[in-house]
Length: 190
Image (cartoon, rainbow, N blue to C red):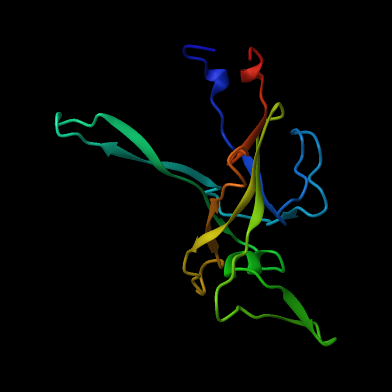
């Protein structure tokens, strides 16, 4: 709807972040349950998830003009940045670039070994948030990976934070980079 409408202002009041192996079925709408292969990464900081889209547009300059004759898209980055607060068998490999947490004998001790050489750790990403009882959004990325991690501070006065930047990757030339599913009365006129 055009014009000012306070009912269309959204606040991501509560949400969650999920990951799944590539090719996992994604929910078809906002009411369907996430499948068993989708792993909820648990608590995140109150900053939530920061989504950034950055397009690189290169100018085509000509001899006949001081301003560009046209532009060409040369790059598109779509990133999701967030900080996980839980340490477990899902968050450690996601932060450190793959692998698995394993149990050591029957002692209740587990271990995670970060590989000496990086390997690609592509996964699907799901982000869900609600605003009250009537509004729910889901963002689903079919392919991407963590491309940057923040330093993890081991301090006495604050929780450990596993801060990541996840970058969406193209599946193919026809597939979307991200799919938005919205249960929101603001779109009722569409």
